[in-house]
Amino acid sequence: MLLHLAMTRLIRRGTLSVEYPDGTRREYRGTPGSAAGMRIRTRRAERRLVLNPGLALGEGYMEGEVEPLGCSLHDLLDFLMLNIAAGGGHPVEEARQWLRRATRWLAQINPAPRSKRNVAHHYDLNGRLYALFLDRDRQYSCAYFPTGRETLEDAQEAKKRHIAAKLWLDRPGLEVLDIGCGWGGMALTLARDWGARVTGITLSEEQLAVARQRAEEAGLADRVRFELLDYRAWDRQVDRIVSVGMFEHVGLAQYGGLFRMVRDSLAEDGVALLHTIGRIDGPGATNPWIAKYIFPGAYCPALSEMMPAIERSGLFATDVEILRLHYALTIQEWRRRFAANRDAIEALYDERFCRMFEFYLASVELIFRHWGHVVFQVQMTRRLETLPITRDWMAEAESRAARGAPMAA
Image 1 (cartoon, rainbow, N blue to C red):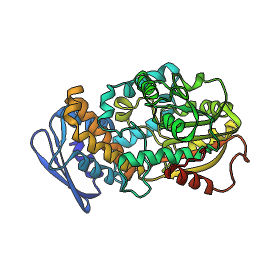
Image 2: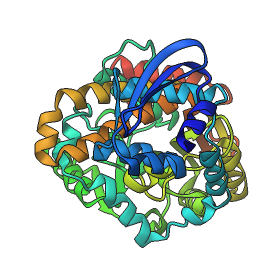
Image 3: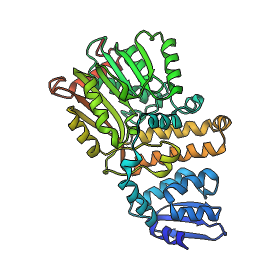
């Protein structure tokens, strides 16, 4: 039995119970540790788990052909990911992973039309979906937990302050470009709390409509505008550029073009801040299930893949911060809220969609806990002398903002 052989090689710690389609139950044991279980209901799912496990596990769960046994989905994925982190492997998946890495450039060629289709795949879903598990401001990116005990709302506000402080908004009226503005929360915050004039650009029509409505309702439409625009079409200079959770969708082949665009669009004394998921364990490849069902064309880079493109663009990287585990805490709360509103979400879509999203949230949370995914915040300028020469000013600006007295006040 090929899957039996693969499981034997995979399990290094703890005990995994597997019930096969014929009713046979086997236990796979490693060194002492936790336990989990998995039921495989069909021969088709069993074959797929042999031939393409990176895709088949998620698909099997979505279709009800693979399910946790005596544990939760989160528990099962946690067990499997810990065993892979401990050196366990699946020979076919290892070969497929090597192939995905070798061809990742091709998979991430994202011209403007394809980028728009990729964005629509995930971000143009029913807007009520996101309202049911995100915070009130609909921040769909890593929150910032200074103590680890903050509510999701407080941690997302802290994230926006943390980013705004790094933009050096030292006077009112600075013009900011927000690339990949989402539902507008960051742009509205920069205008309302920091005195900036902001243009947010997005490829999501759903997000654009919500962002424009929010600007009107907040009385900020004279200082914040939103456009349906690809970053490659931007053609004028601004004082500041911010991008939160968009770089993951750019693709390796476009890094040089993006950073040249940032350089050309920054005023001579401008500052840019890029906030993106990344890898601290070196270059890799996007999981095939994530690429097919959640984020087509996406990739989370290593710093070693980002920095050469920044250097070639003529920008200076003036500060790099690595946020560890903050995204795991963020998604943990998204998972809790999703579960609490599952019936309402199923009414919007169906059971298969709910299973897809449950698998997505649980697996991504655990990637940040066990597999070297983090968040990078990279600050860039065109001139070395643009910013103060120590980091103290960022903490001071952030502290003032937390007290209600932003830098631009």
